Length: 132
Figure 1: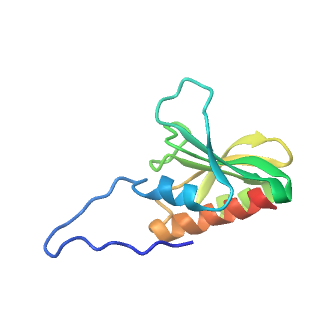
Figure 2: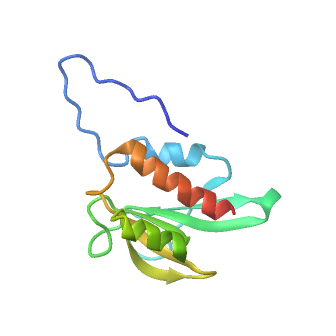
């Protein structure tokens, strides 16, 4: 689930936007689709799984969320309550809102995640829960 990182040319320093290549990576995952966002909130992108073989159709990730909900990164995942509690206890995110079927929306902390690999690991876990 990890992509090979491109190295900047020697002597160059590159500062990438937080979601550079991230949306494309999400959409490359099996059964991931982008869903329209119904509220008037420019910049928010919603992703779900639509998996007919498992009879799963579920929203699982949002990007572009602003404060007061997001912690700099603007990334939120939908996971089961017990998983969200573990993530929050580890300081990796904050529960924002209850969702149907015993799930919650939680923001991902930009300060606690070390980088792209950690973010992808957390997102990968949320993806697995969306499919289960």
